[in-house]
Image 1 (tube, protein in one colour):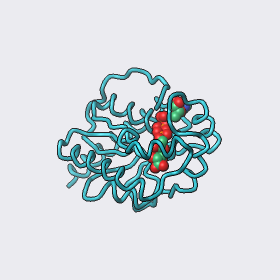
Image 2 (cartoon, protein in one colour; image 1 turned 90 degrees about the vertical axis):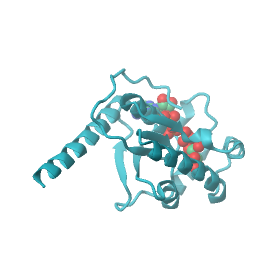
Image 3 (cartoon, helix red, strand yellow; image 1 turned 90 degrees about the horizontal axis):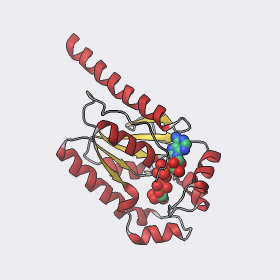
Amino acid sequence: MGTIETAHVSKAIGVRPRFLVVMGVSGTGKTTIATGLATRLGWHFQEGDALHPQSNVDKMSSGQPLTDEDRKPWLELCHDWLSREVKAGHGAVLTCSALKRIYREQLRRDLPVEFIHIRVARDTLADRMTHRKGHFMPPSLLPSQLSTFEEPGDDEPVIHVCGEDHPDVVLEKLIQQFRDEENQKELHAAVG
Ligand SMILES: Nc1ncnc2c1ncn2[C@@H]1O[C@H](COP(=O)(O)OP(=O)(O)O)[C@@H](O)[C@H]1O
Ligand SMILES: O=C(O)[C@H](O)[C@@H](O)[C@H](O)[C@H](O)COP(=O)(O)O
């Protein structure tokens, strides 16, 4: 859970609703970036960690990595949330590590879901996990997070961002990218 303060910015207008999963291994800044996006865009937010069954939280707290079987019901709850949000049509942001391609496929099954992947160097991650307060995830699980992680392919709907930048910089770049994409679409539509 992020503790970095981001500057107050009034709600960004003119960005069409999107359904985003902010992904990456523990400590990349998913919560920080996802809450910042949801606040600036006025979209709904869900912390993926809050959807884990207690047994998963207990397992990670005791230093054991989750298995595919542990993650399956959790990912289904994440998918259910995304599905409800797509129906609502408002625009929504979920945090979820989404470490493997099959997990990302489960999350976006039949849904127009996109991912934002935050890249952060290993040393930075270790430092962030060590200094973060009040979170169940122990830094000892970082190696298993990194070895489980499968880099998203070019065929996956993923926007990559540098999580070493200040969150305000990451957020400004993302919102600018959303706007640029929309302007491009309008231009193409106008040209026919
Ligand atoms: N861009 C950033 N620069 C510096 N510190 C950050 C940045 N993003 C997040 N942090 C800090 O790193 C820690 C982990 O961030 P968090 O958002 O909880 O990550 P995640 O949800 O991916 O585990 C928190 O203490 C947060 O304040
Ligand atoms: O699939 C997993 O192994 C977990 O989802 C893991 O990737 C996640 O990182 C933890 O839930 C800790 O939460 P944070 O990502 O918020 O540190």
